[in-house]
Length: 277
Image (cartoon, rainbow, N blue to C red):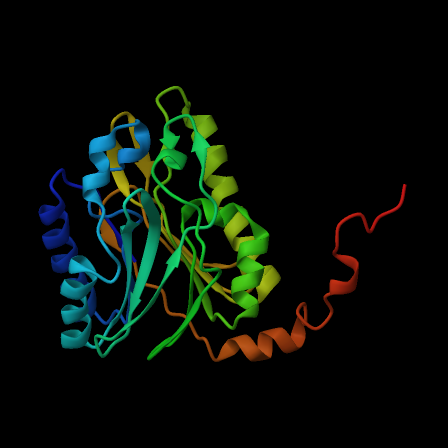
């Protein structure tokens, strides 16, 4: 997991990402993920039409350039991109490139927030291609993005498609009026919900946040990965760093034998208005 701050110019961010990817690969990383919208500062703080110029097709220039690194170093990359599908249609997207440099596909963020300081509905169309799992050289990856992490349905659907790990590129932080105690509560809730996804679905979860202060949002970092018991495997601090997690995907089947939550689901009881008063 590459936890980094963002620079102003897109090409500077791309060069920075390439340098950190090379470092992560040299230190043994196999599946490497960048933060949400890594090519720019978090521009959803305000409504500004000029920000649409930051978008590009997927696959496109950024995925093509990073795919060369994936092939050179034999690594899998999760590449978050501001995607332009057509005039007026834009998505918050994560592309996946396999260790041979091949483009495997993309996931489009399904849940789009509209909160103070996070004005994403102006920029992004809700995802329209469903939940995705990608079979890579090093495991089956389910890609979700930031706000998706609060929805157990998204995690469950992706896990049922066969994901060994749910990976959430993220941009989450504190607004100026939020005190240290409030921020600590948010961080605890943020980790708790994702740890619960790991437990309920018997899989691994990784969340890759950004760091630094941008337009009065303090991105808190704290990127982490957890295992099927919800146990924290690794966790970053509040500065730039590469965070490594050893994930034994072969352990998932035995874990699900002990906790057969998928087997014991009662899908017949989950429809609307099933309860009685």
